Length: 388
Ligand code: SOE
Image (spheres, rainbow, N blue to C red):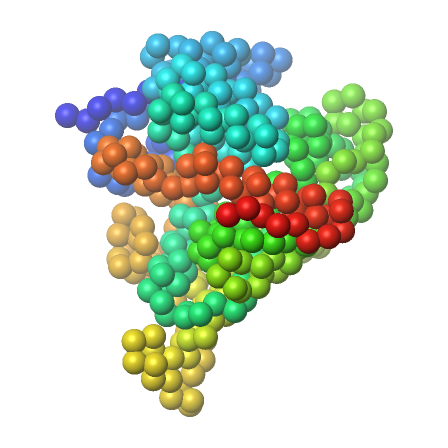
């Protein structure tokens, strides 16, 4: 009989919705030995109407306005952290100490020191844990990794990542508050580096191995903004844009770019890799497509005939493509929300089999370390080494 897992959602904003949807969808689409119950959700007391509406909409059995109360409840098995970044540390540590399974939104923490304490807490408690770097579970990105692992790209030379948005160009956009806490350094920790490049770094290291050195530049285009709640105009302390060069331990070179000032780009997350035998490219604005350039067969070394060489556009919806046998029939597409469901399915499968799914919090700490090195390099204007 399926074991019941009671979920406590700490946070009910954008990510709370994405996660709640995953808990609702995962059971019917994947064969899992668990029955998931959305037992409780936390939200701020001064926003109780929103909290109760969230609970009613997603079928959450109860609400809490004190997250400490939620994480210590006997009837909660899993604590899922999707509140703003400045709360991650305290909630994760308390949940681990209470012996709960811990799932945490990205980025792991405000900085590496906090992240280390969080990893120490989950490892000391011996609780299963996961960080929601959901883009690993875009089928086309998972196929990207599979093709690299199959040796079809061969010796890698270049890795190129871009993650751009445009929603903060207007100077009147306030910083802080419920919807715009990502612009407030005291709540977010950093700007695009922790919010967007953390995704790119996680994917890059997953596919191409560790980054060993970075040199970065950041910019804050709008220097002052009003605070959404107090109206007080204060200096903006986050990075609006960040670009960095990287060296990977495998000898390849990387370029990373992220900004919230790329007019016309809403959530453009791209990556390309160029190797000796082939190349791959992906663009989240065209999420079902993986570009593959086949130059030579990795086994025989035989080159593709010149008149046939060219980019192949793989529509990643076949049953043999990652995750796609769990959804619809070939040709029918899935979307952003399914990446969270795929993530959850892998986590629950690993939990049952005793083979924990990645990325766990330790892996999230690694990404945090690279983000901090990027910001340190931008401050110092120099290359920064990243320990293995
Ligand atoms: C920022 O706008 C954001 O919501 C990120 O925080 C998410 O991680 C990303 O997936 C979508 O954009």
